Length: 171
Image 1 (cartoon, rainbow, N blue to C red):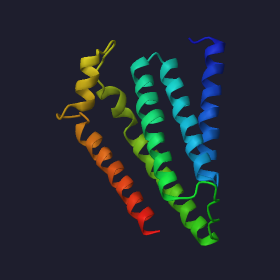
Image 2 (cartoon, helix red, strand yellow):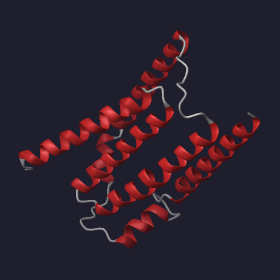
Image 3 (cartoon, rainbow, N blue to C red):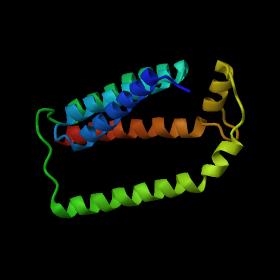
Image 4 (cartoon, one colour):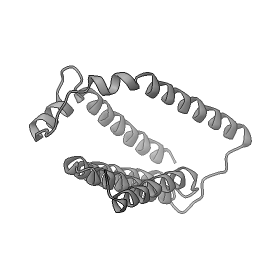
């Protein structure tokens, strides 16, 4: 059983993640949204460190909080005027967005609860994984290994940057 102090720290970190996530999607200034996203990623790394997953916490800070947010800020500064406010959404767009969010939340909940029983029984027992095991699982090309999604995300980010440059040049 965890101590009371550890639980309080967990709830503080969870509150920071929730508040900054909401601020990320509700602020009208795009650089503030990127800053709130940075806070969310740092708080997620804090959760990893609290769970004694030092490698994942370090990767979270180095790759996501460091690299991806810098990439977002670079794309924002390249394509927009950062001091401008975004336009308010029309009421029809808000309704469609809320409906889409509810559908996505429902689908995610269904996927989570329908596979919940299989999730904990099918995971291999690894009490102390080594760096080689983690690296093989993340960048291997076999069954239940993640090289293809990793490469797909990197190509997607590259396409977003190229698209941002093209949009910026047409202005």
